[in-house]
Length: 158
Image (cartoon, rainbow, N blue to C red; front, side, top):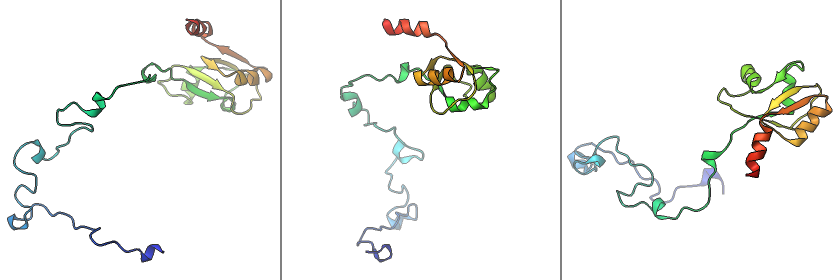
């Protein structure tokens, strides 16, 4: 079977309903929308899940489980390989990343990950860092300062 030999089965392609083309067409005047009411007006739509005022199914079903979306902590991620864009003399922190355009202006926390290699001794201030990333930086002679580490440890114990 080839695509150029495929034919449509009978009745699979219907003509478009031509509305507003006179009374004799059967689709004139109100164009199949009935009379009056919001459904007859242009721009009418209902939100998904609306069941005409009846209690919708998604509210009848039980809600189970926990969703952390509202309480999550977003981190701006920087990999070890991205540090090559900085001088070894400057301290790399979230403000420096935002200033150079490597992080969003709305970013609040920074996390260092170990993807890539590092060859210079950097001083980095982050909120979180993976153990492998810390090892790579320290192996190159650099230093990783984890901010608020004591504060987060006390939260985990509670």
